[in-house]
Length: 101
Image 1 (cartoon, helix red, strand yellow):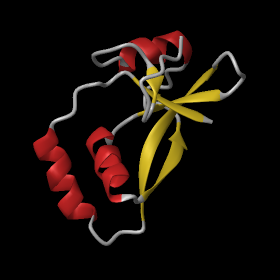
Image 2: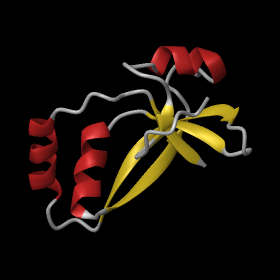
Image 3: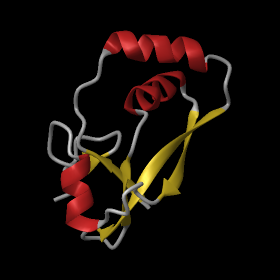
């Protein structure tokens, strides 16, 4: 499974607040929506549903990030889910600048 996102905007003040909240934790768990899609390498793709700032904070602190796969609340999958979850940029692999398509 590969986690993707289309959110580029990160507010550093929020990340700093999350760093304070996460201090001392061993891991965080973030929800991802299953898309029913795969990338060119055959990896199942999931969209980070929430927690972009928490992800950034955990990464800065070196805290393990775990992902909890969930269905979208409205049952969306595929292109419909990609459109509904789109934020502000091309879909890329979480934690990278590499576009999925």
